[in-house]
Image (cartoon, rainbow, N blue to C red; front, top):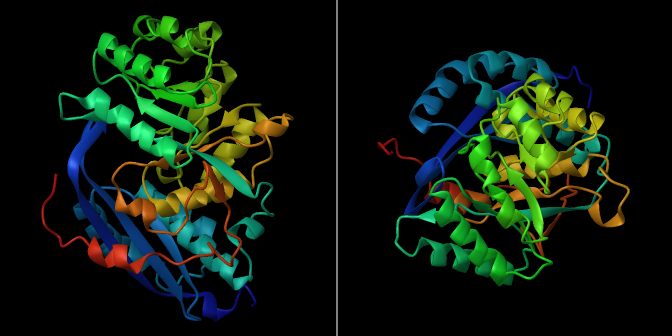
Length: 379
């Protein structure tokens, strides 16, 4: 199909705002979640070639703004101009740019008869490790026991890497939770701690004695506000495990001071927080060029995580070690139907990369129909 073919002009855009109210709130240091939401878009060309994208934001504002401003702009545009289109959408709404770029990337891949990974030069890794990501806090007195039971359930289905939350309770209480967790796990199971930027440097150092007690850590994630570059560099020099962070950094330039100062071991960009899929891939490549690992953040959205896995599959190995060719990607294991919007599931903590044309799968329409937001208020 010729790239100037009118059949690749965008004919219509469908929107699917989805909302699920949680049966029980859960949370991290930033507070409790009482609902999960996502916003799927489907862009369709004159030839009937479609592509799916995903956006995460507050639905009332997102839905109105997207339908009234962005959809009219997209109509009639040529899907192959995806980077230019995403750049313009980004000026209006950055998170929408991420979703639009996903959909247009799938359209172009389908038009070329390729998978997304083939469009990007081919997958270098056929499977990607994932870690089970928890929101450890619950509104119940036995929250520690509840948290440990959740980890045990994930362990039983094959996960061997976990991320749990700290920073939302006192250091003493959080440390009691983590000691119980580590004591129940075998040394082969790896654990990451995520503080959601809750601490200062002195408070972070209080974790050193716990960290030194166990050998099986993945990393310590965002213990302090990310703009404290010098303090991160000091902590990295003294901490016996890797430091990770960067999920809310939108542009590569925001990572640059951290890389230049040697303030991180592992970069964690989030596709939904960047300016589009190509911008996100630049984040990954820049980290590689500086010699850093990349373990992407991807807590919101099944489709965004799928694209995160595609990008990780196309990323060169970070190490010459046979056992650590590629870094793990986050996998939300909390109550969230949108984790299952696209039928991709880990087996023993690994995900096989789909090889079909485009993204290689269709969304679960039962979930879409069951969770379609009705426009009512939520908080």
